[in-house]
Image (cartoon, rainbow, N blue to C red; front, side):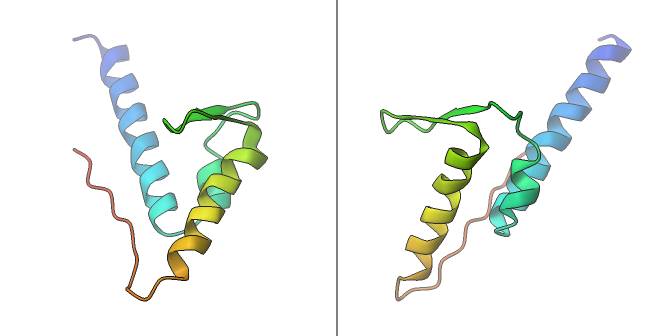
Length: 80
């Protein structure tokens, strides 16, 4: 493996870690700073979410929905 591949691997790993960490803690503004301005997200519900505003709505709506439940809710990602 060449040096540039190791560096790319480390950068990708750090990006995934930051995305999961920010999202799990509800720090959506920091998480969304990882996205390109015109990002598109497809979460397998048949719709595409285009742009930071629509993508943010996915997370804030989900967070609002989870916080209305009777049981404790949290999300924790484990990546290797």
